Image (cartoon, rainbow, N blue to C red; front, side, top):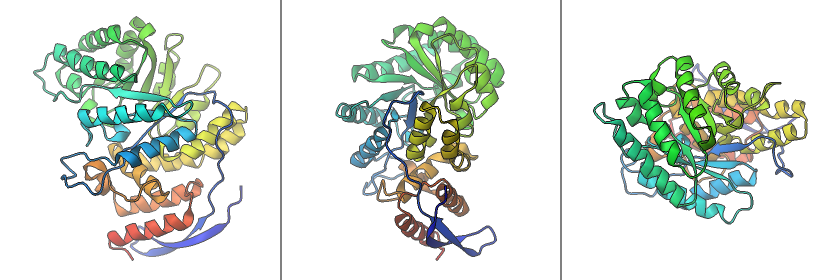
Length: 391
């Protein structure tokens, strides 16, 4: 699709020069007319309150109105919202009390939106990791958060536990914890296996640093509790590992891809199956994701890839190592597109990426047709560059 250049901006380059860049007209995206053939959750970010008097590295302060407005934006594109996950800086700025309030507000907002779906993160992040913890305390922490989510009427996404990683002595300890917690949940949950590239504190999850061996432990847990597991979200950024695990899941248990590098291929699937989606990048590319999923539902695989292909380099850039800083890029794009009035993150993480990272993000978002208002995006990019000493 031909897109004409409609704005110009001076962008810094690696050789410390400014270069004229021509911004093209945005791609046109339409709201979905029919349901998708894939379940698709966007893990949603939190909009910080820039007026807060709290110290940003120490206290989470959310702009609740702007945060909930962004969830309405995601629902309007037919996407579900995965709430209080790592994209919302869970355990990386947002503690459990703030996360529970976020869940409550999102569930309340969803009641007024036809078709709105919400998955709610429940974990153990109110329990400080300690090698001397017993697994019974980890179980109790999971029970506390699962009970709180169920009391609000939420669907549980069972998050990986830093406390369990710290104190587990063997893979059997993981089985003991998950068997106990899953035996008590009211409705089937999505288990979230978050890799160490997203959270270094989770290295060795399931009792193994080798992902293939860890997968065996996880699959044993799922098989024993298949009636309590809707699916597994795998965030390892390894498509071959995900496909291998997908093919071994019990019938009726879904694979939710958390692979922000290879999502297009994994969601499309193959003759032996496909992955559904629970992705942080869908927060940033909601219009494109929605239109691509509509094309896939219509059997238009060429259209699906035409839309998503340019979003993959954008996603790989946002999620590049250190991957845990991807929230900075997600929020930056939301700001460029006018979804919030500032580029401030919970925990002060707007400082987590370098100048050229943001410059390349701007170019890649334009290449994907995702700068919805190029004039606004250019104004805000110039504003940002000025704060970094580039004018």
